[in-house]
Length: 231
Image (tube, rainbow, N blue to C red):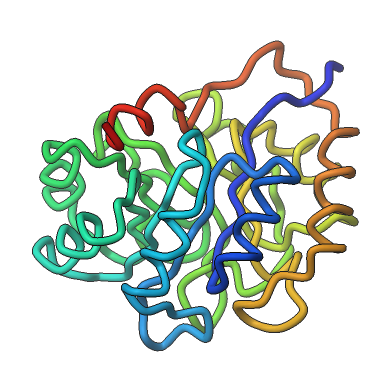
């Protein structure tokens, strides 16, 4: 076993000061949700304020659910997003079209609902976020699940693990799934969309103690790409 050296995305941010604090404690990526039914839905102006104040090396991720190409690209350009996370039933053609525009794509796949993890080959050259997909809304819905189900998947594809993560569960999640990155939202919140910085600190501390059987992990978010997008 070796120390885990993967990356961390904190998602569902709505406040610039909380986003800045998350990056100060080590977050590699900040996620903002553009999906009106979500309690973490954010306006374009609020997201732009967050993105403008983030360090250049921090990934700026917009989360969308079954949105159109034009709407996604409008928001990506306005907010200066580096990455788009597709969290619905988006077709492979949409992911490829976004990638051709120079924006990174993370596609959510699920173990209990469509699109399933066995459909990964339909999305070439894409990074995947995997969770169970059992909740009422798209996303982890704070549900723990059998993270080991993603272990074999992560040997073949770039893997971001989500769902049921917290300071108390992250060691088990990383040991079981050996992901390249982890994505947390409700596990560090005081209420939907509001991050509890004490919980963020506790989570980061817990991650620093995590161990994995893998000797190396893939880099999901690369600083050189962000800097290029901002130049």
